[in-house]
Image 1 (cartoon, one colour):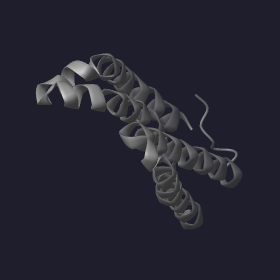
Image 2 (image 1 turned 90 degrees about the vertical axis):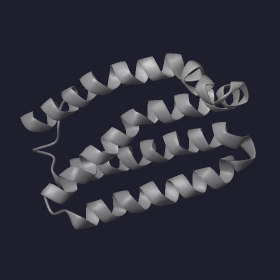
Image 3 (image 1 turned 120 degrees about the horizontal axis):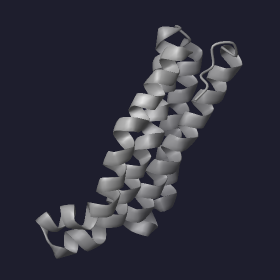
Image 4 (image 1 turned 30 degrees about the horizontal axis):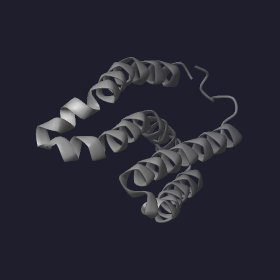
Length: 130
């Protein structure tokens, strides 16, 4: 419980400033590769940057499943992660890089939510509180 909360706080403390900086500076960072690359990739980079939060949550819950040897919850979460990203990406292809970025963000968010719910169902007494 307490170690999980400390881990979450540490991740947020380290990730939040990096996300903010990269979110704001993404056009400038990408301009190194050219104006076209910068204009077309900035939104995608921003979406991928924001997904740092959802992917961190996903890694926390899957790590908890490994630690507790809850292989069924780990398998379900990983299947949701894989299928959600593939399905969302297929739907998003017509929208280009921005669509793929949204698909990644939604897929990782869905897997994180499913993983957290499974963790709460299997370990209600040790569920983290932020």
